[in-house]
Image 1 (spheres, rainbow, N blue to C red):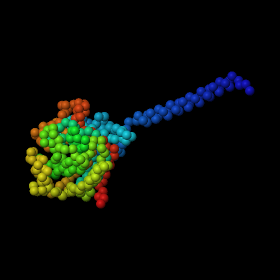
Image 2 (image 1 turned 60 degrees about the vertical axis):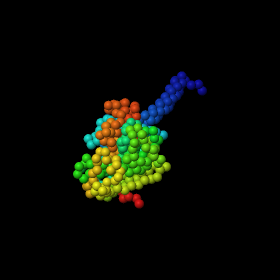
Image 3 (image 1 turned 30 degrees about the vertical axis):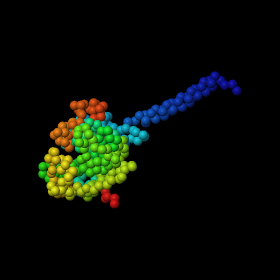
Image 4 (image 1 turned 120 degrees about the vertical axis):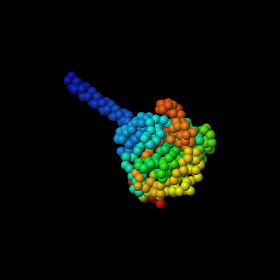
Length: 352
């Protein structure tokens, strides 16, 4: 049967319409896939607890609402080996908080709590970089604090700071935690007692500006994952540290009853480390009992440009390029910490 010319027209029109629809669908699907791949991931997409926090960044910029928030070069998301990480990056010199001269890109918990009430913070992280400039004699050199409990009243001291520190040229660094006394009387006499987790505690320093102690055998490398749990329950702080290939470490410390009420209670570590700056205070009998606290997490850079001759414990004399953040980043004068998981909530009964 021969088709009329009009039939040919309709056949061609239908064929063209079908082809166009198919191609259009493929194009739209491809565009959707590209759009999905190019979607910006924010820190709260990776770790959903961000609504519980505010943040201060190393350039002084702060955010009280972290929903769909990033701050390039300070607080953002990176993907490595198909895993998303929240990045915290801070130069040796930037804009610091009211209570510190050290630069930070660090979360601050909005909710406050007392040791008697308690709270819990966890984090799984790796340190990507610590400052490569500093003074090896200074305990704070080449270090970053990756989690803390911070007082928000009274002396506003820190019952806990978790550090990572690596000397230049070493493959492995140390993880340790410090307890700062809630000083009885003059807070100018305060000090931190340091406890090693893996590697050294804070008191292990170099003999000269550029000589370093032996590399720790059981240390943690840059880019090596580890995790911590801070669990404060009924006034007692329970700490747990884990890392594949390393012994799990646990510690217990009361936050409501001091171990340092008398001058005879001051540890030898303190008498040695702080002798040059005359810090030899004692602590209130009830330590931090009844005082408000909150958690902090991120990268609190302990390296600064202050003169070590003024304070051989905390003034690291690091290079800061007059506060030029771009130059500091280009020359290794910064710290960078990546978290892939973290939680915050109420303290829980310890697991025995």
